[in-house]
Image (tube, rainbow, N blue to C red; front, side, top):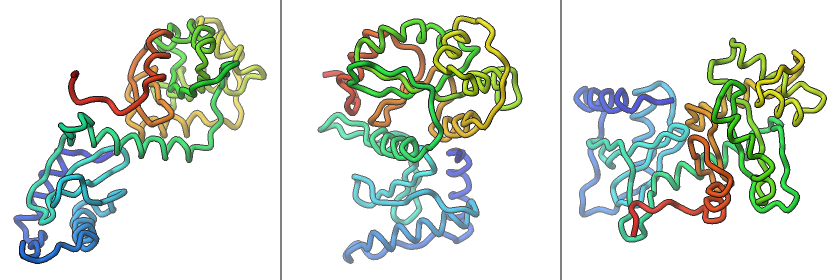
Length: 254
């Protein structure tokens, strides 16, 4: 994931070194595609690899640059660099968060690893949960799995062993995915009961790496169908209310 401070400093150095380009005269129409391409070239020269996307933001002359789910903004002449959220005070929406949601949703939709599913009988929502066997709040969330399901929320667990891929937590969660009854093994593991050690072809490593790209840095991490990423435990009642109202967050309360 891109280091934003490093990006700012390196771009500044490149500008001084003469890599930047001059904007067209303000009296001429700006070719946004050409500007985006030129910014892309500056970033490639800086980091030896292209950003995932460069495009116009909601502010004329300001371009949105994305590295995975990380967003920065550059002026069309590459002179000004902004790291932070872009807020629309009229709609009270966080435009940066909306862009990040789109990326998270796309990354999640493209993921082919099979989750461990606790399906609601009358499904209203599907919630992806990055989980770790040795996480206390993950266990607390799972103790409410029946209540969560009763509220119409299907939970799809994805593995995120916080201690890394060469850890006891990794081995434990692999055993859950390789169990004959994954749901029973997940419930036992959350109750700190031993699960038979097993290995098999499994998506644990891929899910862990996906979580890192999505910006997961702790568990449980809750990912909604719209791409909203919510860190930490949430009680079943609040979770249901949040999913029912899952919409772009306001910048500030009315």
